[in-house]
Image (tube, rainbow, N blue to C red; front, side, top):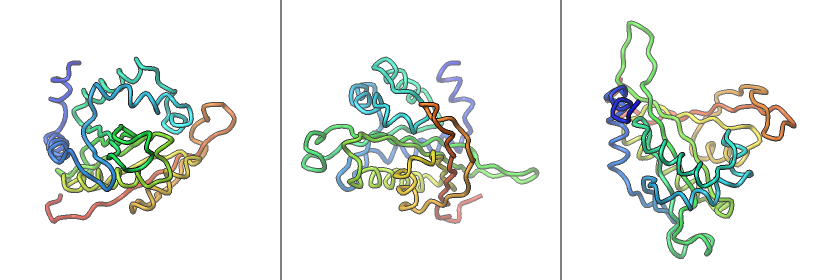
Length: 215
């Protein structure tokens, strides 16, 4: 299916939400500059998405260069999503990463659910993220995800969801700091990459402020 055909299958309210987030970019958030991912970000993303300690909680194996190029292509061709990279401002954070891409945040929109005969034009979103190990523990991920959530809220999304494997405790703490609620746990949902144990899958959500324009 071509990208044009995929776009034609996306509801208008989802296309509008995607367009609104893209129009808000680039964003400045504390020490970070957030912009839409590009094909020439492949080397920067490979620096951390090739790291097993990063990818083990993403549900995918470490990526080689070709894998990262393919990932960026799939991100670009998804008409229901916006993929953002975080650049570290000069003079902020680890000096070896200054001015470089240190992480990515991806938001995928979908129509909100409604039981017939009710209908709604509201949209929900799912969020995911990955960051360079050297950028951890400094609040950079929190700054970045918060800024993206603000853009998603401005796009009039109703609800944002996230899934986190239970051993990824820093990710769970990040979501809690940003106001997400842990809605439940899918117990022993997935076998860990090394086959040593079954991981729980946590379900998180954030209800965004209603501006009165929904449903």
